[in-house]
Amino acid sequence: MSREFTLPKWYDLHTHFRQENQMQAYIAAHKAMGCAGALAMPNTQPPVAVVFEKDEGASGYWSIERYMRDLNVAGAREFEVLIVPLYLTKETTPDMILKGAGSGVLKACKAYPPHGTTGAEFGAPLMTHIDNGVLKAMEEAGVVLCVHGEEHGLSPTAYFDRHSNAEEVFYKERMGRVRDAYPDLKIVCEHVTTKVAVDFVKESGEMVAATVTPQHLIYTIGDLIQGLKYHLFCLPVVKFEEDREALRGAVTASGNRKFFAGTDSAPHTMKATECGCAAGCFTGGVAPQLYAHGFEMAGVDMGSVAGQAVFQAFLCDNGARFYGLEPSSETFVLVKEPSRVDPVNTPQGSVVPLPLGVNEPELGWSIKL
Image (cartoon, rainbow, N blue to C red):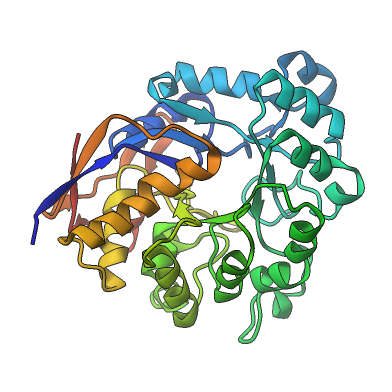
């Protein structure tokens, strides 16, 4: 078995860098794991919900221009690619989409279920953007729709039950309508967790793709609740064995072009709070190693040419192709040898990476840059 293999640097096409004096540490963690670029989520406080700085004052929102400048000052200027999606709110208009895309600033938009996850309180139901013409404008302008695919406003039983959950409801009742109404709209079904969502992506055309996180390839709901490992709590929550098997089958399939890496790495200096647990797993610095472990758990021979090819397609190639990005000419090396996981320190406090939070302080893989 080959102990190491070389990969193109990759784009994390769903991650969180937060704001203010924490960003530098999180961006550095991404660069340390071979990232050539990132799609940085806009659920800051306030959210990134206007395109141009000149529009910030009247709206009360941050702009893509402002947030990108802040990210670049914090170290993101060294990335080859940096995308900040526009946070879709009830105030988003088709004119904002067309002008933003025409300027070259707007590449993607993010749809959050209202109150469905961290920083999602400004979100509007996805159907709002059918009714107000925003999705049509995105289709015309070639702007990618990034979707947190969970239905909002459900009762606890409907939200997570033995026979259904918020993600399954959303993909059964909502996404088919969006896909069919806008056949030329590029859609990324972000952090899919269920067989229902995987099947939706597989059955849809080439304009629909999906990101998959490391934790959803590795863990199930039993791992979360046995001992209540709250560092594994994310949204959508990890699901059942049938769902994990569907995810593993999708990402490791020969010829996979629709599923790609998006870590949803979400740092919290205070994970457990008085009112509950903050949603999000921090995988900055360790994601390729975790993905490699997930592929091994799925039965992929990571020492074979075929195994390395399917892993590269998922981590490095598919997402870049879908977003129309040039592959990176720089490389990093993934090595089959142990590496230690350490907390990431920020001025606001330490962040515990997911493996450390579930009592796995050593990884089976390491990275050489």
